[in-house]
Length: 199
Image 1 (cartoon, helix red, strand yellow):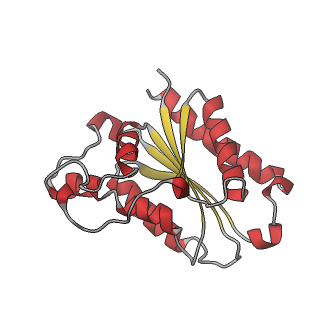
Image 2 (tube, one colour):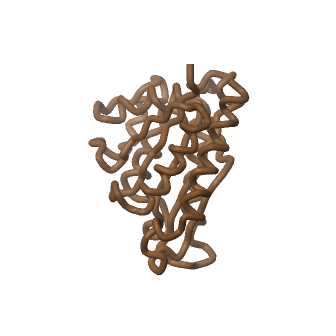
């Protein structure tokens, strides 16, 4: 069975630069021998976390919406790719809400001391972060990295690699930068290869 990678697209533009970069990483992961499932996060229908704390005692959320289909994918995946633009120096709203709804994993791990992720999977699960910023500032990605690192810790999928592209307002179209597209492919291939070599 091929290793399973879950890819979260946080951009509202399915044909935008973030999506283009993600496609390259997916192609690399598939080339390495992995199976990739893509989730277009902005197209999901779910509410933000309401802090009802049903998940303090249960391994699920009390709200019934599209997140019910996402939890099993997060549990069963072998690794993760997160592709997101920077918005207001942080994670876009819909993707951030998905992360917040993973209180299910937080409560299991930290409240009940019983992670929903099997111990053997925790050793090899890794996350690749792909992020694009329109601006070119030294702290463009600080907010993204803080949130993603916390999310990865909660779901037991260590943030292990990243490709951060700044100044996209001036670059405009990622297709004009084959070196960056190849780097996206290579990052995906490296993530996939690590899984294939350590099943």
